[in-house]
Length: 136
Image (cartoon, rainbow, N blue to C red; front, side, top):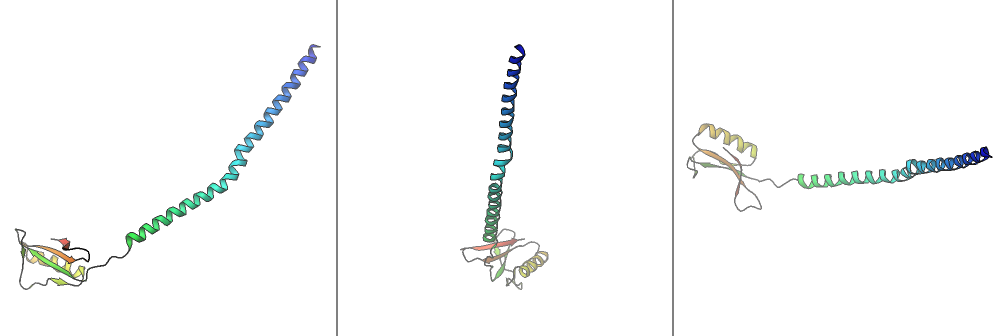
């Protein structure tokens, strides 16, 4: 009789063990592959949408920042003496249409008149005062 009790315990152990193993396999497959595969498709789409949104925001910010500004139509060179007072030197050109030409003349004037300082200025539309672009 003793062997019958051991055999029934063994059968119960096998039955409970196989049901626990089957259930754990089911839970492992459910949470390990089934549920993630269902949500992974949506998470990939959400991730792609977030990346595209970030690219769009960056592009709009860059376009707003990089839009062309109104450039001045006239550049002038102001001459200052060693005390910082505005001064006039006869015979030098002081009005220019482009920044590069004015800058080139200003560098040559600095070589010719080393005791004077020169400022490349222009009037901007929203400014009351002249704006200094370069100073030597």
